Length: 35
Image 1 (cartoon, rainbow, N blue to C red):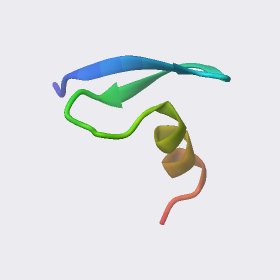
Image 2 (cartoon, rainbow, N blue to C red):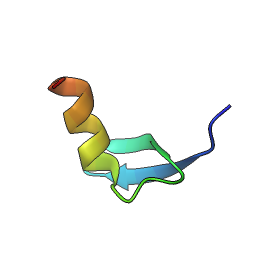
Image 3 (spheres, rainbow, N blue to C red):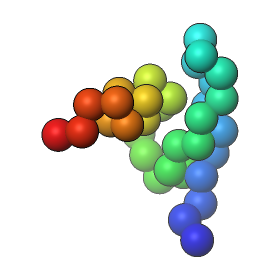
Image 4 (cartoon, helix red, strand yellow):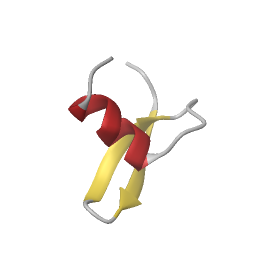
């Protein structure tokens, strides 16, 4: 199981990979706009 951390933004909390250099807004953008 991958380690995660909880990040908070204006929409609430989201799980972000622990090794990621990005935050909650990037995770939400990737989920909403797959590339």
